Length: 395
Image (cartoon, rainbow, N blue to C red; front, side):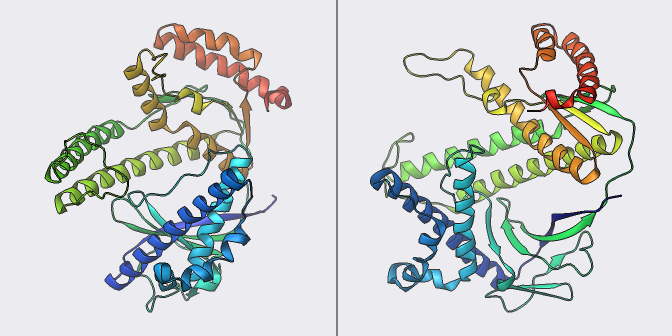
């Protein structure tokens, strides 16, 4: 059996001391500020002057930013954190030019915060990890064993919206493919359940619906507190703040934001756990996996329209968009692809314009129960065809 060298990240939760949490908060803030500064500099240089700015140009200006009295606080964190933030920005632009993602956007302090360290900015000895600018090692909860003798090539620290701290250790290791099996399956992605051609169904967790309702309730509480803060400033409840005017944030508003972040993190964990169990089960039981290449961006496009041509059924379409994003079609496809490579399996992506699929798409106008039954039968034929002429099905 051929052994494959892969890069795998091991993620653990850790509990920082007050001093470590304070230092990490500085690192998060500086990494976010440098990312937004670099994005602004690159966008301004291109759209105003037609010049392209790269990583090396921005990295050469970091020393001047640290010496500037207005941004001298950047020297309080490791320089590797700032450099890696610029490298992440460069990677985002590379994906944009390859048409793999949208144009990079500015980072917000209300989202998950993260920063990365390279080997010259941390020490990993005897199972203890110490970051740059930190005096003591991190209190990591080793929920699963880290490979013996492995050395992390990079470390990423993350603080979630719920206030939890996680660390991801990237390392290289050898993996062996799983024993071959005779199973062949076609996977049909639906908003309510994932249907396989062998008759197995994987329903999306009902807990996600409960958490979505709870999140909306907490968001309404946030909006009420924001409106009250505007009234205290002498503005109307629906007034828009002018540029440069900051809203006074009360402790109750901070608690409301924290509740929204906590329930968002909970929903993400439930979804991730379900997706990993689903994809692992499919990869272990089948040698060939056929699935449709869905255009998720088009499926979740807004139906609002414009002022001249307003859309129809906007509320129903927004609900469908939430259901599609809640199931995470793109993440399921990504996990199936990389897990199949590690396990020695074959994933065949059927183009949505493939001729064999036209008859299946016509069944979407029928009742849902009939559609599911016929769709599964259609996938049985597609999985068989993928074995014979897989080169024609891939794109």
